Amino acid sequence: EFFVEPHFLTIFVHWLPTGPRKWAMHWLSFWSWFWHASREESEALVDEIRLLSKREMEELFPDCRIVTERFLLMPKSYIAVR
Image (cartoon, rainbow, N blue to C red; front, side):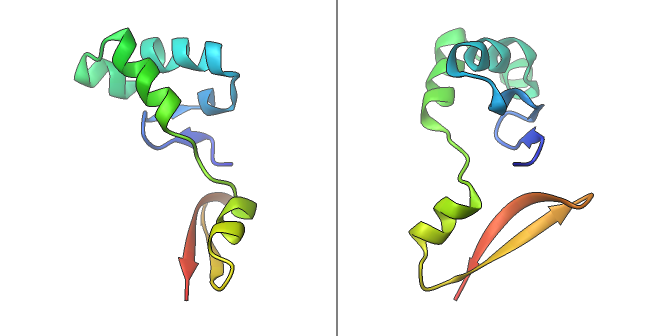
C-alpha cells in the first residue's frame, strides 16, 4: 500500500503486473544499480518477494492486534502486536 517498495527502494513499481515489474525492478531500482544485479537475480527476487496487505496480516495473526505504521499519513507497514 505504501508507494515505496522497501526491498528494491523503488517507487510505484510493486503495483505493476509481474512482467513489467520484473523489467522495472531490474532497470529502475536502486537495489539493482547498487548491487549490479543480473537480470536473473532481479527476476528471482521479484518472484520471491510479495508485500502483505493488512487483511493478510490479520489472517496470519488472528490473535494479534495489527498496528499500522504511517508515513505522511500513508500506511507504510503493519506490525502484529500480542
